[in-house]
Image 1 (tube, one colour):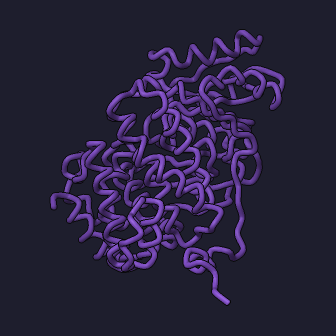
Image 2: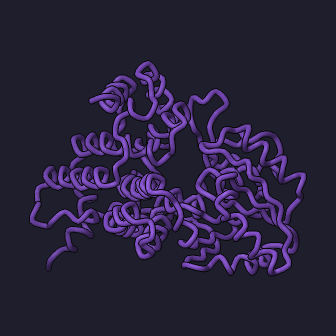
Length: 400
């Protein structure tokens, strides 16, 4: 009698007890924005408050949403003060806007910053206190004001995760509110809303999708159920992100990247991420750079470290990255997986050095220390360097 196939043997340890969560209602498809009024009404009968940013107002995206609601007779106010890499005081300001508007439902419209701001603020309104009070895992006590999340980029997957992030007042780190109450009631993913996204933002958000998928594939909480969508997201991103960056009018590439983002989000929400994101949060909080850029800078060094210290695990990541089967040795497969990532980073043209994104060398020990305080990410990582090792890794990223 023969045993199970090798891929099943490798994943046997992924079949232990696990929990899977996601947004209750997920709507995907080009043009599905026209369904928004139906979903607002299913949640509550009353007005809406749209949480967004001024750039989307100027681009006419907010008007597209308000027009859809107006045609259905749904009143909507707009709060357009959402900030990139949202600080806690911005989230508190959003909570105050929700209190004043007293909407039946809050719509988070934009990238991850707008969606995260809306989700945390909605919980602050019902739980009291300030946004900073609810940082941590399962700290939020009760549901927030009902929310719907509408992404306008293909990257963060905030619409299908129970994690929302914000920057501490001293800008030392970006930390997470983790709770089933963070999930919106509905995610409405219309790839048409990403069509006008500029190339550099397409690249950064797309690399965020790639990092979500690659990191969650090798976390200590990964399961078969989380690896399947992660693998799908990796394959789609490798094929379609370079196309979307090269030609923003490529509708197939836009649609595929929105779907890849969704798939990576399913995995991210349940398997978590590793040191790539841990470092990126600390770097982004200080340097105020886009999250996808920070992730890209950290991706290759962390993956090289993982390939060196845990080649067997990284060899499993080689399969969805399309490494040929004739590369059989685990160490060789791990290195080949890293090489695939290197090619993708080169194709999208994002910076790979900390000195090129506004980071100062003197920050590096503090960045390392802040990263290690993010114990949830550190413990989830297959490789766990100490502060000195992490500082040396950052030195290499700075100017190597």
